[in-house]
Image (cartoon, rainbow, N blue to C red):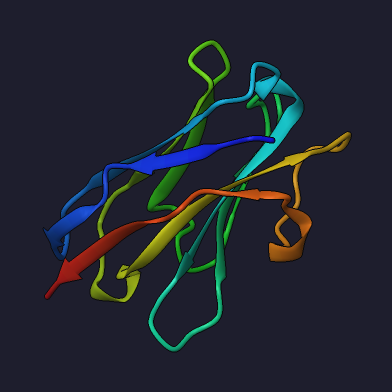
Length: 125
């Protein structure tokens, strides 16, 4: 059972930056593809970013491409999401997710087995 704990959320102004972290309990963290998703009130959970097991490949949702960067440290068992040029529409609860995967990653919500509890990001205009 993989336990994921997100941190780093908060209240920022439009144009600011914020960095999220997600620490995993799993010793074989490098076997897991990792993803970031977000969910705003009244909306479905939305794909944000994913990173392959080694960190060599990444992919992003269209709404965050060019502004967000996902990375991971397999020694620290942690995945990161650097968010720049934040917009009010980025306001949501952000979740990290993990899947034991043989490929690179998946962008599907139902493709992930393990989820963190979420961290709130609020961007004021």
